[in-house]
Structure formats: structure tokens, C-alpha cells
Image 1 (cartoon, rainbow, N blue to C red):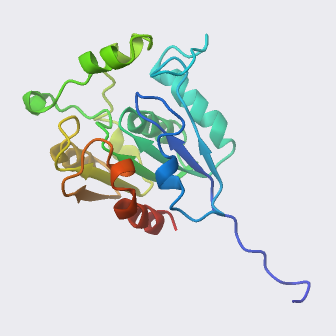
Image 2: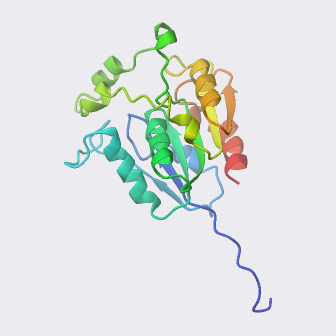
Image 3: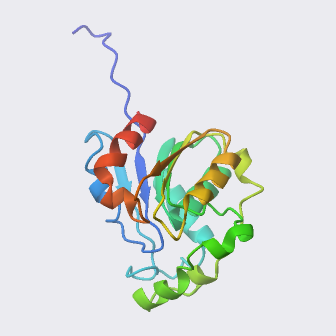
Amino acid sequence: MGPHRKEAALHPPLIFLPGAGASPDFWRPLAERLPGDWPRRHLGWPGLGDQPAAADVNSLDDLVRLVEAAMGDGPADLLAQSMGGVVALKVALRNPGKVRRLVLSVTSGGVDAAARAAALHDWRAGYQQNYPNAAAWIREDRTDLTDQIPAIGCPALLLYGDADPIAPPFVGERLAGLLPEARLHIVAGGDHDLVVSRADEVAPLIQAHLA
């Protein structure tokens, strides 16, 4: 090939954000089903789940800064689970143009769902039992991004399961109605861990969205 051969464009890095369980390994089963030449980075949340604490991580905004550091100059694609979706949306709001695409799985998205709160399973008590050493601030956080979300312009794929008591499909419908460019996919029988338990089903949807 001659000297003027055009180099293939590198895919923007994929940055995987876990939920409150905080493990950087959460997304790996799904990530293994995406093209191997797509750069990727798996983040964990210090002080949450079973992850070691860090003195400078004491709030959701501190997690936002961790993601911003991982993004560098961008652009990047963010793939987020549950609480990680709130972090991802805050990152997108603070960094317009640097988040190319979003994949949000079973997240509240920081959306006010008080009108249907009785239909939501409160995860906090169970979380404290499962992760007794996790920082208390995560159970106290009540971030509400409802009024800000319409300012996010990047395309978003929303994944929800109709068997998920923590983030039922109506939460995804509410979020999809706020995001200017969102596509909602409901996984029949999907629970809160659907990107792991149903990885074979959702990986092609995610790949097509990020291609």
C-alpha cells in the first residue's frame, strides 16, 4: 500500500462504570463480547462495595472526577450500571462533547420517581447488609438530575429488565423521555444484573450502538 494509505480510525475508549457494588470486574463478561480492538478501562469505586477506601473519595462528585481522569481529553464512551449511571450522566453534563455515547443499564439516572416510589424496591438496607464496610454516604445520596438531563445531547442506549424491582421499566421510560437522543430496550425477564446474566443478548445491541 502506498504512503498515502489512510490509517484506520481508533475507536474511542470504552469506560465501564459499576453500580454501588463497585467492582471493576462487574462489566468484564459483557466487555469480552465486544470487539477486542476497542480500547477499554474498567473502573471501581473506592470505599464502596468491597473496594478499599480512598481518602479523597467521599461523594458522588468524587466518583465523577475519577471518570473524568480516566477520560482524559476524550472523547470516550461510558457504559454504566445502576448507580454508575448517575455518575455517567453527571460526567456528561459537566463535559459536553467529551462523552460520545452512553450505555445506561438499570439506572435511576438521578430521575425523580417519587410519584411511583411505592413500586420501587429500596436497595439500601440490603446493601448495608451485603457491604457492611461500605461508606455510608452512598446510602444517603439523593441526587436529582431531572431538570438537567434534557441538556445531554449524546446518543444513549437504555437497558432495563421487566423483572427488576430496583429499576423497573417505568424508570427507563421516564429517563428516555428526558434524554433528547435515547433508545430504550426492555429485556424480557431481565433483572438488575442483566448485562451479566443476559450478556449474550445485550452485547450485540451495545456493539451496534457504539459502532
